[in-house]
Length: 467
Image (cartoon, rainbow, N blue to C red; front, side):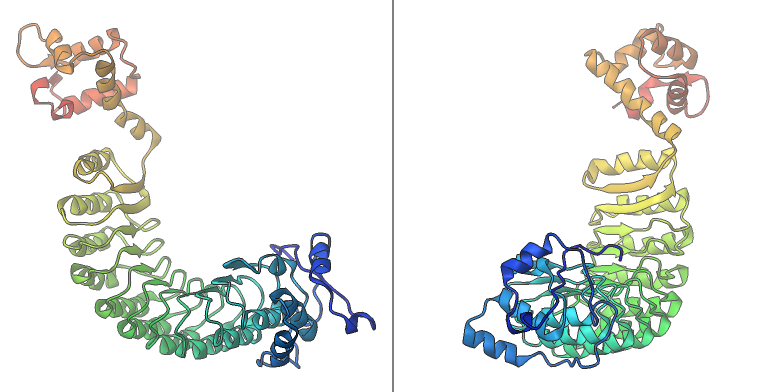
C-alpha cells in the first residue's frame, strides 16, 4: 500500500494472550521493527458487528483500574479487533496527532475514537487517506460529541460519499467546538453539499471549511451560496476543483454579497468566467472582509479582468489575488496593474499572474508602482531576453555609481556644443570605450529606451529614467 507509514503493529491473540493485554513498551518496541499488517476489518473493510456506540465498559474499567491513555487505547484495539498503531502511543502528549495515510480503516477509527473520547490533549487531528468510509466517520463523530479539545479535523481522501456527509452533518448541527474541517477528495456530490450546507447555516463554530476536489456542481453551489448568506462564522471556504460553473459560482458570489465574515474564498478550477465576474466586481466594491480570492485555472480573460477591475478600483481589503492559468494576456495584466496603482487605498500585496507573458511596459509600470507600494509582490512570466534587457538601465546606473561619477557628466562630455543632446552613434561608441558591462542586445535596448521616437538623437536633459 503506497504512502502508508510503516508504524502499525499486528498483535495476534492466542489462548494465553487473550487473558493479558500486551504492555505499552512491548507494542512500542515491536512498532519499530515490524511492517504494517492489516487484519480483517482494517483499511477498506467493514465489520458487521460494529456499532457507533463507543464501548463504555472500557471507560468504566479504566477509571476503576486507573488505566493510562496508552492502556485505554490498547484495550480498545483488543476489544474492536483493530491493529494498534505505535505512533499513537508515542505521541499521546502531542497537541497535533498526524495519522495521515496510516490505513486505520473503520475499526482503527473506532479504537482511536474510544481513546479520544476522554483524552483532552489533542487539538489537531490529521486523518487523511485512511479509508475511514462512513462507518469509521460515525465513530469519530460520536467521539466529537464528548471530546472538548479537538478544534481541527482533517478527513480528506477517506471515501466518505453521501453517507459520510450525512454523518458529519448531524455532528455539525450541534457543533460548538470544531473550528476547522477538511473534507476534500471525498467524492461529495450535490446531495452531500446540500446536507452540509443545511447543517452549517446555523453553525457559529466552524471557521475553515475545505470541500475542494469533490463533485459539487451547480445545485450544490446554490445550496452552499444560501449557506454562505446565512452563516456568520466561516472565514475560509475552499471549493476549488469542483464543477460549479455559472449557476453555482453566481450563487456563491450572491452569498458573499450578504456574508460579513468570509476572509478567504478559493474557487480555483471551478468554471468561473466572464458571466459571473460582473457580479463579483459589484460585491468587491462594497465588501470589507475578503482578504484572499483565488480564481486560478478558470475562464477569466482580458475582458473579465476589465470587469473585475471595476471592483478592485475601490476595494480596500483584498490582499491576495490569484489569477494564474487563465486566458489573460499582457493587455489584461496592464489593466490590472494600472487599477492597483491608481487605487491608493488598495490593500493588495500579492498578485499571481505567473502564467501571463508580460511586456517591458508592464515591468516598467510595476517599478513605478513599487515606489508608493514597496510591499507589492507580483508573480508573472517574462521572456529571459526581455528580462536581461530590463537589467541594462540598472547596470548603466550602477557603473557610474561605483565610479562616483554622474551620468549627466557622461552625457555632457559627449555634448561638445552644449545642445543637451547627443547622437545615438556617439552614445554607443562612448559606452563601449568606457567598458560598461552591457552586451550588444542590452546596449541596443538602452538606445531605444533613450531615443523613443527613433530620431537617432538622445535628448538627455529629458530622460526621467536617469533621475
